[in-house]
Length: 283
Image (cartoon, rainbow, N blue to C red; front, top):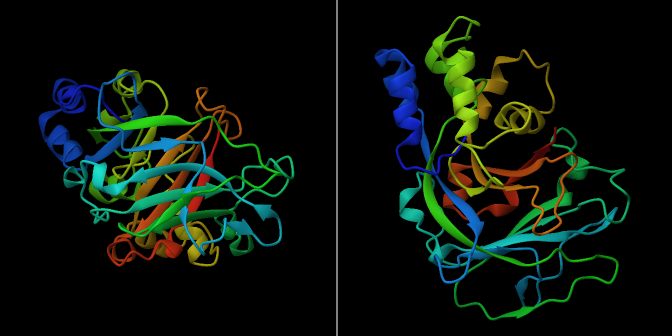
């Protein structure tokens, strides 16, 4: 859940929760960079949704070999991001480009599934270091590019989903009577969110439960869901980027869903974006 007021989540916690619970809860918050449509001259443009990508010479348009080319979703200029606010080792410069097999070619019959390694090539992140010459690439004829929307970025606090392994580790299983489960508190949390949830870093804003266990389950080879290794592995993964459904770009991921790319911190520090993993959720 993101906030548009820098103190909104903290204020809500301290006004709605017992102080001891509030301190522990706010200790789990992480800063995210919320990506929003650039309006006029307000804010520095840090990237874009849709449009066409700029790629280095010799770098082929990403494809899922068994299915076809991926659609270009977004790009962000790491040097333009206020990345010092983040707790992940994002590159200080260069460009991250996100591609996804969005169903244009098969009407969504072969979705990318974190539990199926044969589908992982359907969502890719390309990193172009600063100073590498690039050219604007035309999309393959079989794809219709999304409308281009310039993006700005602003730091915001994010709270974990109540089923997130961090919450389980801090508080244990939450009974219905726990203050964090209070209906008014949960509704107030939802009221703080507005608009499309595009972001870099921070906690993911899941549609149907935390995304980290979904990725962990897949990379562990799909063990039973009660396997304790899933929670342990999930704690190793952080959100790299989230891109929501967005009417301005005609992006619709299922029924109002969102795309999520996650990565281990050490792989991010080493620029091993081929090791990023993807999941998506919809309502």
